[in-house]
Image (tube, rainbow, N blue to C red; front, side, top):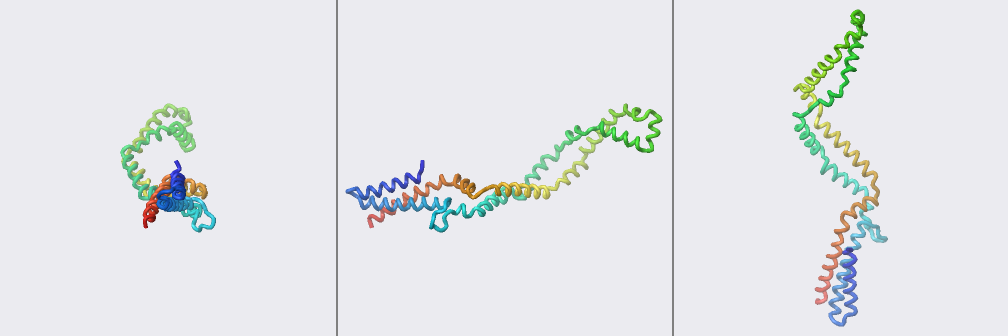
Length: 236
């Protein structure tokens, strides 16, 4: 339902009724004219927000102030939602919840212990112990140690990963302030890139979609209040 159109039509019908009616013509005409003027001026004001009207200075506010609207959108996003303090509080809360559950098991499971053992053998062969190792069968002599050494290495790394000293060092290395600043800067870069893609027409359509439906009531109340003023004026 187009509230603006209906309001203007009703006001126009009152004007016509005032011109044709044999009774209360002055009252109807006054109500109709005032109502029509109120509705039309409010409709024109709304139209001027979104479109440029020839010879009417200041029309096309939204397209003309395109850069200001972009800056306003960015400020709303960055200054109201993704502030450094908000991000810092979020990271701190996540760190607090993760401190007791920080588990490196997936990382330890992904380690190639066979490769580490092989590197150890290669290092022995390349050292002064290499000749001695060849005297007792070479690298093959160490092969029975592969499994137990890998298991011991896994246990040792797990103990290190879950030690209080290691956990403390990890959390200290995750600087909340630095992370917050980095995340905020990254978000701002993303917002800037998205806003750079916007055109004046896109911004106009976004704002028009959000508020034009509700601005129709300005036309309705302009017509109603104008009609009331016209009614009062008819008795003066």
